[in-house]
Length: 398
Image (tube, rainbow, N blue to C red; front, side, top):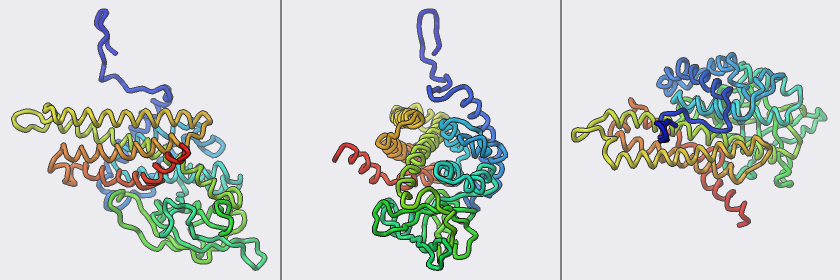
């Protein structure tokens, strides 16, 4: 806020702050931003054709960015949960949704259950190298016939009948981000088909085991920079030590994991919407029609006002919900609201930005259409809009 004598004037150019972030968070933000702009963003176009390379994980591991909120004893930085939000926000500046998603699957979707439920041996074998960026992780939930309905999962893990104490896994998973590059997968299986929600178990499965088949690299509308796999598991034998958490508690373990995934996804969606908003604002101030910049027309000015309001509403919802989650609450209703709202407004903003660019927005060279294609997944992944609405509605006893 600027002042002139006794008159207080708004300072719209002031740095945006929020109570969840300290000066340490802002210093971290600057460090990540410098890395993203210098080392990742220049490759965004290339990665749309080739997918992003594994050196991204190794480099981020070297810089300490893969374990920002993980304990120091495992190679992490020991930061608070808000550090992962900073990472998600700054990775959006790479303008490669697929790369950001691949990293998020590794850091915020697969590492947390290993840290929360894994044995010390599992953490040393997988978490430590994952934080260092020398091992890559993926998460196996969705199947050809089981997406939002996690309870419908058919992948089976049964105790071997030869007295070895091993489990034999059969089934398939689809839409698995990092599936072709991963060294291990946190796999959701059904161990007791008759036990309902108490019949699921997580396994930490090395991807080089006999019977693990990386069947197909899937082609997608957006997120081209990430590899997305169809996987098969054909009589894959794993020791009992591969169980992650408790036998029969896998459904509850993965439902817990999804809350953090949804919150991080919401933060990334807001950041991507903010980035495309700023790029479009610059365009609107430069592009002229009928003798003046298009941003000076009331119709365009109002479009920006609407977009800015939507972005800010989603941002505040994400930050406040993150604060509650970090302080010991389990606000599933509000996390679902944040995920739903952020995903929707991000797509709306990207679509409006295409409209403001006109024909240029439809062209690949401007990169605006890619933002829409990448963000559209947020309304499907980690729980569809429809599932989020049902979770919210049921939370009111409906």
